[in-house]
Length: 459
Image 1 (cartoon, rainbow, N blue to C red):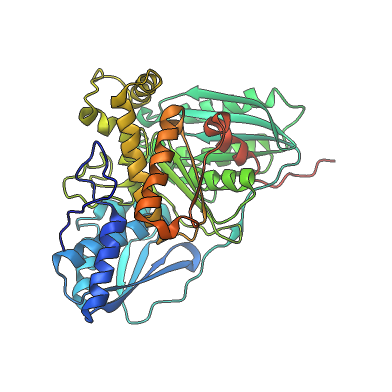
Image 2: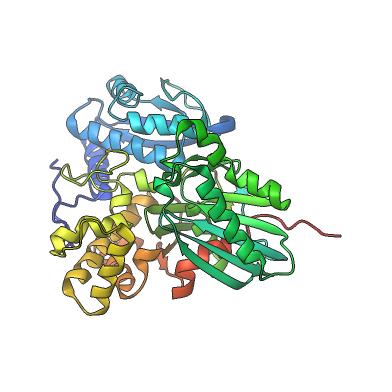
């Protein structure tokens, strides 16, 4: 089977785009039809014995196509579900390949080291004939509206804060910052603290604080985040504990969650639906998931690192070094990646947020080059949503973030719907794409974050 694909709706500025869903489904169909397919069961164990399972079939030999399929599958599951231990039941040749590749000395050492940072355990691959039963966290999240609350949302290029009284935002603010290059944890603390005080000034009291932030957050601590990339190891604990420091100072309930999960919560609150996948296209790609029962499962949902394109010549992520991952398809990074193909030249020193603004200006002026950027991202989205459906049982997806602002965002959604109707007609009634209004696209996560903690009763 060739790694090339002929798409019914090609990506205008990326002719080599090979959607993961196209390759994966063709591979599984071919393996099944061969009569030689054997089961492959993966179990990803994370904190407290929680475990997520995934079952598929593969050819028994470690041929090139099988290796590609398994490698990308394991990588996707690691960043979608999370885990410090991978249990694998399958062909010995495949098991040995995964154990060698997914080690701190293997080709996927970045992923292994990130999992170790996230869970505080040495990453390991265990080859076994018996995979433990699945056990997820299944915690109801958010939806607490009563009282005077502050919600904040920390992104890589700006942060947002909202003062919310009985579910209504009475004050919202968006402030630019550049935390990725700051080595002093006080920079992050002072920005967050000052924003909270500005929001508090609009309310008679503060009953609770809820936060949304890019990165991996466990027990109100930041374990891995691009926001803290410049923090030296000796100061990282101070930076990672910023939310707990704030909670102690304000002496009110505080809950901080990954911004993707808060995106899913925002969608569930605004639409009154569960089975929600939230996708925020901002400085990077943030994703979150609420299951059909309205529960957060404790998965990582860091889809910025999850592969969506199997084109061997796809661009590489500057942080992980891997190619074809979500951040380069659903974020400001995606817009920047497509600028050369669109023949749009911008100053080399211009930051990504400013580059996006320039593209948005061109789009507003009717520039066809800018339109093709958004059309391409729309094609990416249309082929990736079915891919996500293979791992997430969702029926609604909320799409928001800076990349979706303005007329360009409308093109992204329209093109994605075209792909779904043309290539995946069987999913036409199963995937409903929702977008918030313009204001909610920019500050909705901060408002949703405010509903995370239970309000403390005051005497």
